[in-house]
Length: 320
Image (tube, one colour):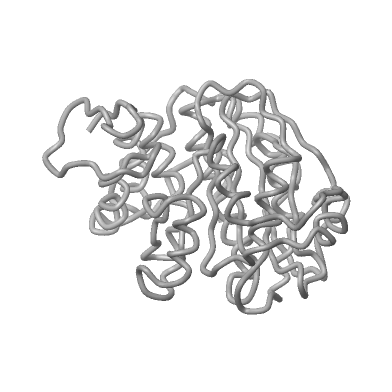
């Protein structure tokens, strides 16, 4: 597992990397708390910590850079909370050096039609506090194969989160591999979120509403075929250009960090970070799909673009 101390000497890539001055105090405090708590573990459990993950909760952060990471935990994706947990210090230490007020919320998505915990969510947090929150999630592994309750989560995002300090659309990353129930019954909204709604929630419209505030991406496992029913539905929900196919599941967190680093103008530094952990071939493989799209709107970037490039769709200026 990665550690909170920021020591990169044990990374097994050929490149060398040191975290920057940004976030140094945050890393030091997290490392101190981690050392006091003992070795990092993510043990087997029979369920989530319900006091932490209750989706009835309404959360708020005054961070200008909130981030939501949502994970489908049905079926073969049940172990993904552990995969994120393993790389949590890497994720936070890397991104918080770019923007120190980074605050992260985690969510686990299941199927409200058959799962006991179809939606698990955490408050926003920083540093070592994220360790307890992510560990509170439970990969139930149920679900009805497909579709799942992504719409329930979208409604929660729209109605249970306050982010008053935004200066630009924050990232919301969804790791998944299947489609969503087109409608979320109002009874499920009442049962799991405690909300009273007049009618069932249209999942596509809920996600379209999410996209008005959040820079939303669906990072899809390497399953199915491009343009299949899963892609078609998510295209309606967030736009086809915001679907990014993961070629290597072990690098899922890197895909998310790469998108964010690119948007924040720190992609070159992030590539150096990867070189200290991966082969140059792997860095190139992962970089290519990220470098070809605008990290704000997902629009294609010309292959001959160089220097400062202004996206013709959303106006974002990127350093190519």
